[in-house]
Image (cartoon, rainbow, N blue to C red; front, top):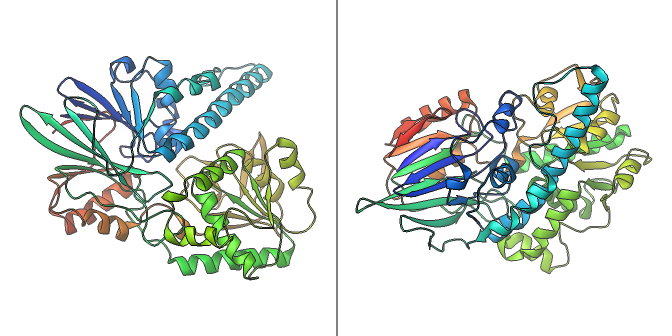
Length: 465
């Protein structure tokens, strides 16, 4: 078996791993690069002919894991895309939204270049269109958790619950080659224990080779109780100042987690009743999928729904589907809480709300998720005094806060708990999905705790197992 690292190697996004075994060529994940320094990789020719790839195994529906699928299909891929049922439905929403943004960005880029009389570094055409995204949908094939499925004579795949977002999976590939069997596990993004909404991670029992994420491998998250207390404190203090709380959210999981906590704070009168706007058509549609797949939710959330206290529906919740509804939010009198995408402030409606509130000392911009290098979110959280939005510069006067305990990613301690759950240590562990410095630190931590050969792969590196 040969693995080629086409993404998420010494960086976080662009998850793509080419797996070749015998006559079978497959891809684990097919994501977009989102870090500014690596965006050009989205435009490069794929490493192999997409038509030669038999299947794609999808860990989950975040853009950096599934967002390149329309380009792959546009370039000739016609195989099956295997994932869980919730991942299929969420991915369809994610891909359509991404395609619309690609088209809009191309239009804006052409207009800007025409005004400025120049051409930029990247093409003025979209990476893919809405029609390209729709062409992906017939290729989805769903597999339930813990149901081994043979997809070729050489490969059998099993999906385990990664506990990260709804439908997220750890992918186990059993490959038969030359009469011997080897088990290779791709962790995907590993979730956390005792979190609301989704169930805890399931740890595979064995792996000869493990490809393991390290996004938060160099740090520990705040305790949930401390994070909720900080979250509440920021909201209360912002309400007292008469400002708005703007929260950039990822449409999948983070938006639903925050609705969970806000519904509790409001129902128990821990914060004043104010409008809670969810200003992301994608997050709204994905929340509907959470309502549909109740069987995938944890016991606590199921109990709330049975009691008529669904975290996805409460009196103060205001749904903003249309552009017109979004525009009226900033004219709302008094304080409000605004959940808007995108989570790293790379696009979407949140940029408009940041523009309206970033210069207001009474308002707060509250970050509750990972901000990749090169994104506007990272720039703000690292203390920028001025930011540039829509070609205009604005001074940062709003209160900037970062609550880390809401992350859907396991921290260092939780990652160690996960990898320690195997019956015996894997022969090799490849540390992926982490910024270079983080991967190095987590690899050192693994060497101190796990008796495996620890490797940090590089982009385009090939490894024969």
